[in-house]
Length: 168
Image (cartoon, rainbow, N blue to C red; front, side, top):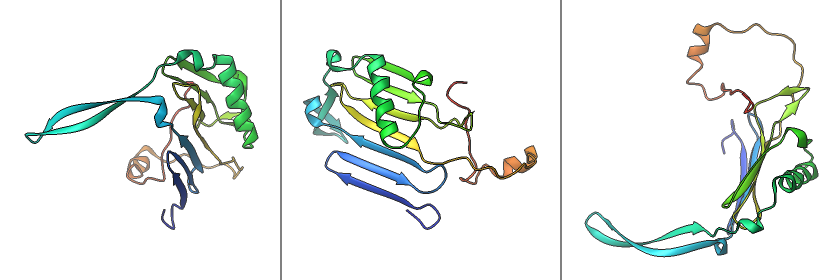
């Protein structure tokens, strides 16, 4: 965190929360359970010396991962409990034997902002990741677009960025 870009983060065991008070007010929540992973010891040479590492992969339990309509309902309920209005009909769900996710477009004043709300589930069907943005659009009038020449000079300034909505 800096005075120009304040943020707040908490890390407890296998859970973390980050909130950024600049830009779009982005935030995330992440939690993982090491019991949901299968680890094996592997030896790998490094700089000519043997080294023992652990290779950890999620345990595949697709029967525990909710179906797509339940994923959308669960994610919608969580975001609405957090005070964010999301449209279930606009959600995109993805599901595999390794986990699942749901993405909602962040629509404000009828405009798809391109900054989505995201929820993720692990291979055991536990909700383990949330992310979003906490800004609101405020009418500030009309402004002319800057020239292409002026836009290039702003590329190195981290405050100026953008992307098309995921629907494009």
